[in-house]
Length: 191
Image 1 (spheres, rainbow, N blue to C red):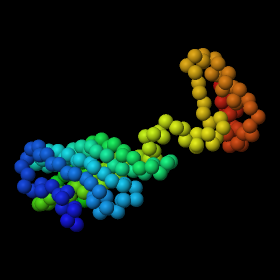
Image 2: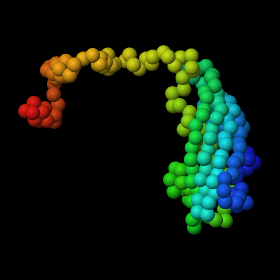
Image 3: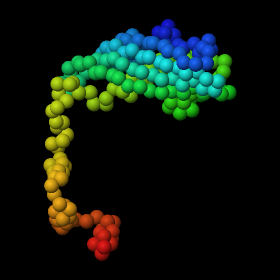
Image 4: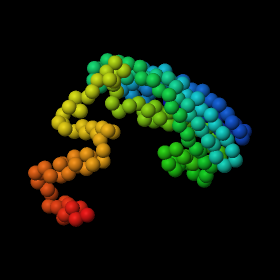
């Protein structure tokens, strides 16, 4: 819990106007969230710019740095660069609650907001689902070769008549037609 206190912003002391804060996200942050399985190291800086007004606090988050990931294809570790921004709005209201993914309601006597969970979620969403080492990004996936004929290429040089001929050839192949679509095909041919 001591780690989480490092990500507190004391908003009750702030006057209306713009305020800037800086936070560092390192390995201990991901160890706290038990995310060492997918993040092997990190060095991320988070700059938070708050604009406090009488009714809302607008928070702009700017992330920059790297996370060390393991390649899904080669199992080699690599540094994945991160650089993105997020915006969160804190509105004053009677109770503390999450209104949407980027709008939170806080009470006027809330002493501080803790941004650790938000920072974790933003970083988590910025990491690609398929982690590929930069050396292997140019190689094609095996999945692309699984289905024969799954890639269709139309040249810009083809005239509309040629494209229509290709479509007609495709329609005239002896494929069994699903009876549910047969009626619609008849209507299409009438036009």
